[in-house]
Image 1 (cartoon, rainbow, N blue to C red):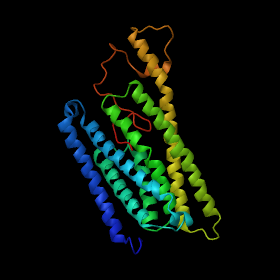
Image 2 (image 1 turned 30 degrees about the vertical axis):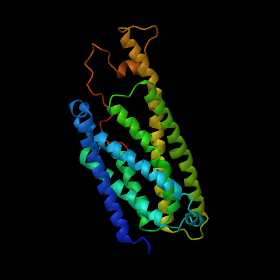
Image 3 (image 1 turned 90 degrees about the horizontal axis):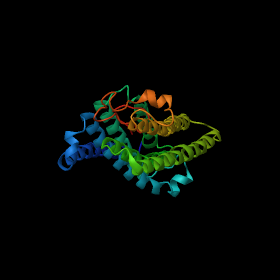
Image 4 (image 1 turned 120 degrees about the vertical axis):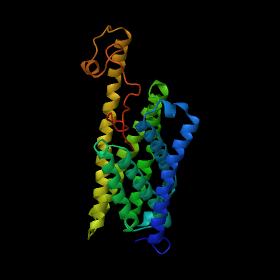
Length: 298
């Protein structure tokens, strides 16, 4: 729908520009990595190189969007009418996000397995539906901005961890510290604060004398995103619990197969020591929200 100061053709123009810019950023990262990092072309597999470029573009987008939209959360126009209030800033950054989601969805479908990225694809499609409610229906702008700020602000650390894994730096105190900070931020922003915002939206909708379809559509989008966040949080917690088992197995291998304490069955069954089987040069990196596939994560 847009507005008189931000009409539909401007929304489409900004979204198209966003799509093109993030596509070019991925290409620029690829070319820069070829020129500056010798191991980029010699040691990384094609799938890892595509991940590397995409993760850097996604991390930059998240930082830019979260920073600019954070200021709009305090906009008096939006806070005075959380359901109907709209501003040019809302339209502009909503269009930027729409273009980015279109880019990232196209990138995922083009370069990664649909089966391995089904959950992330569902996340993107729900996000696009939320953008459509905000920029085309002129509704729920404040809650859309809350999703953008608190969800996207977690992604720079997420993609930093992904790049560290691809570069073979997924060990040591730095990686461990960043992982802990990310999990804490994820829980605070994408679980705790996000669900408080969802309950606020639900309370407003339930108090309406007439409850329009778009209000319940917004509740459904927000609820689905929170369910995905809960799913990913369980994955993150599971990953952190696996770490002690992996360290114990490494100790077993380093001692030549014997240790003072018997290894955990899960660890012994899930890994191989040197001499049992040659490990792949590039182990399959854990995805950001769990799993072990050499594929796209957001």
